[in-house]
Each structure stands twice: as C-alpha cells, then as structure tokens.
Length: 73
Image (cartoon, one colour):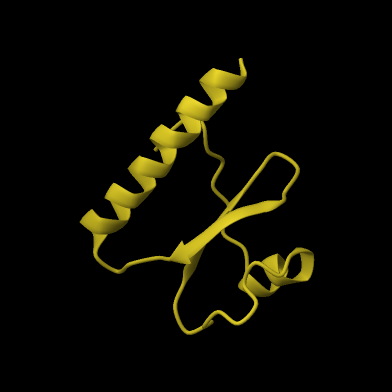
C-alpha cells in the first residue's frame, strides 16, 4: 500500500512477548500494531472488518509515516 511500510502477519502473542502495548486489550478482535525499525511497538488499534474504513486508517498512517520520514531525511 505504501513504500513506508513492511507488512507482516504475526500472532498477537509474539507482539506480547516483546512489548506490553497489548496489555489489558481484548484479543477477540484482530489488531494492527505499528512497529519502528527496531521492532519497538509505537501504536496499536483494532482492525475493522469494513474494508473501506480499514483502507482509510492505513492510508492515514502511511501518510503520517511518510511525512515523518521526510522530516528525518
């Protein structure tokens, strides 16, 4: 979707093993976890089943990440 992202599907238990970002969060819904280059979780949210809403959310994250990367360059 955007060159600023690498997509990986991993079990939530794997994320929980490296961070407490999912502590006290429901595991009944799929979640999106944004990691930095060092695999440190930055943000998490529920993934919505509605394709258009999910695309909008990911698009906004991609734009913010691209803007942040441009500022660092």
